[in-house]
Image 1 (cartoon, rainbow, N blue to C red):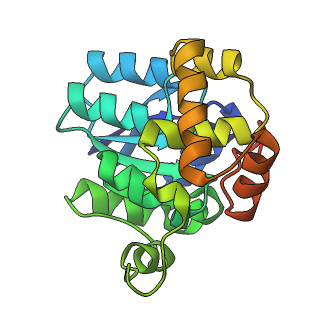
Image 2 (cartoon, rainbow, N blue to C red):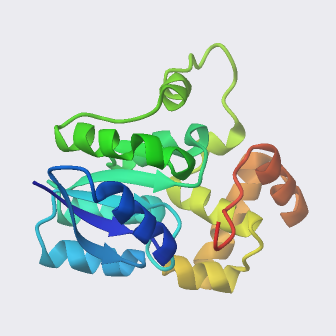
Length: 214
């Protein structure tokens, strides 16, 4: 039996995932979390086989949540289920410690197969994500945002979504000063002058944070 921890801040999504998994033999949703901090607490207290994580939740989330879970529960397998396009996020998620990456719009068809493959010790990405990950660096210069650290990358997409330094600091458990420093480094690395250019860059490269309820 594969015991799952499902973490997503939208109950409707969690209910939908449970409905998909209800008829899958050998898979059990053992616990649910509505935010990253709750997911981490549950993982500390229980032995799950696999965590099914949304990339964008209140509190600790995304790449930092993956890293914390792998640090505290090294044997816990992680499958990311996200609204974000695979080409922008799959590589970072896998590097952080996830064993698979699946977009929500393909979950109904691929979720069970992805869970089984990851639980068996494999890595699950779609053909589109695999093609992106296998891209020949010499064939085309990578976009500038790929040189950002994981923390800078998360700050970038939150800034582009219209969140201010105080909001971002609270969400990522950072000081406002640290967020401002990250913003400065982001603008420098992307060769941008201001927040408006940052938003335009994020739109052009598909980096915008999904709005709540999507």
